[in-house]
Length: 347
Figure (cartoon, rainbow, N blue to C red):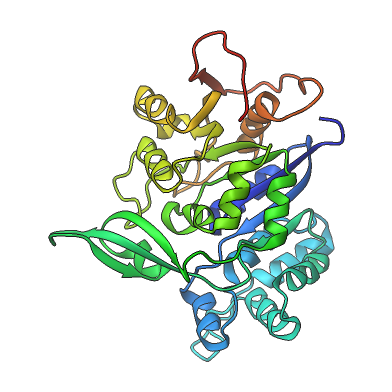
């Protein structure tokens, strides 16, 4: 595309950080916007939220750090906002960036302005926005291990850590207003990425904010779902890649994606994943498998360069433009979910 792609990434925590880091290594991406969940209630973010009534800053801080300028000044400020206080006093466990964001949120009473101020300090290569301007709370129906029936669990930390199987999630307050700037970013994007991340508490919440969900359904952007490398203990324990897609479709039945990207080593039964993706994919949509995991990491983690290469391949196929960007090479394979020979048709 002439001028480069405008990409919006939706998520939170380490999953969104991995996506943003990879996007910065894609030369065909000209503009990056991160839309971040605001339902965290644990750790430093939870303490600040409860004490001050502000948006939980942790996931917002991580997204800002991922987009910080790659020069001496940017690295200095990124390292500083990520620094956590030690010890056992009142500051123990707080990240400097969380405190800085909390101060700006309280002083300016405008999360978008506060994020832009810190983004300027870090020289961010992109923009960070909250999915809503008010803090949200996650509730879930969970089948507890060894207990009959479904039980209501409240709070992000509780939903993520309660032993059992999560069936569905929703937000409090119900039908919260979306951040207008986030809605506009989705509508103006060339590509929108959903995932990876904590599936029920970082990914699905974006689909539960009506204004943001409607923007995702109506945008002319190509929609790409990025699957996790592994199930998460508690929240998605025992989930297969295809079950992640089934849960996504269950929470947003009208959503249609133009691509699903998964790590080839994380998909033990590719045929099942393709079958599960059939209900989610738009006509001409595809499942892409690539080696995007960091083989040297002790815990599942994306390799930024490998993920960037895979994303460039997907963008080359699904993003709008005057002509193809050209082949990038790499180990990505794809399989068309539509009958052979059908041209992609985006809804």
